[in-house]
Image (cartoon, rainbow, N blue to C red; front, side):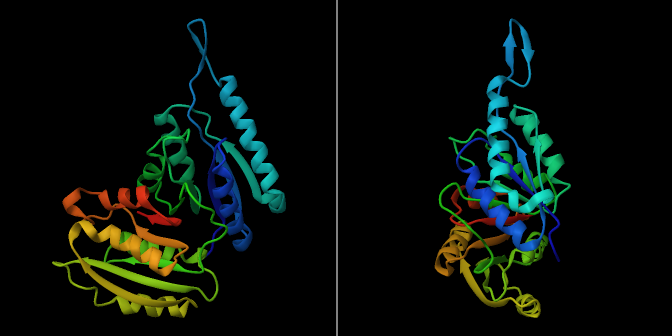
Length: 269
């Protein structure tokens, strides 16, 4: 399993440098191509009653992001490319971003918050609609690399299985991995979890397995605590799995992780 093409979201704000640096490190380590995709909310400029696109503000932000990308990626040579989503509304940014993301092996996005000029639901939309693994980088902290201390959020589900294997190209040699299964009191422990640990070992990933039984509303907080306790540098988790925190509604667990992550998270759906 290998990566050939990585897509990283860029905009004109300072946090772009953090996720771009991480995406660049992954591309250098795996030999993958790296494409920066500029996406930033903006309104059209009106001349009288006639809208004009792109606005001078958008054009300036685009060129600032393009310049920063080119400065950061000279070591990649022709393995680096830059694209513009070329839209300013939430709806159009989301639609075009997802359509482009579907053509890549891995998508790298930042965790959104109020100060960022991107649609608040862009990571969620990319995870749910693109069909590609999405690596989301927290909006606080620096993450020069991932894959030495991975944590696999395991349960007997399609999403968890996809995440466990989608993350493998990011896992470093001699990694210290932890497989965590968090179950509700009404759930049965996965009797085949040891086969995942064995499969990881066959791929050179040393992993331990831990099982927790908690109340329904504590599932995701227990996972986040495990990330902290393991000093994990990446969490791999299935997204929008049916049944995950079902009392809170479909996707509530995914949104909780998106809101409260403390390390980069690879989501697979």
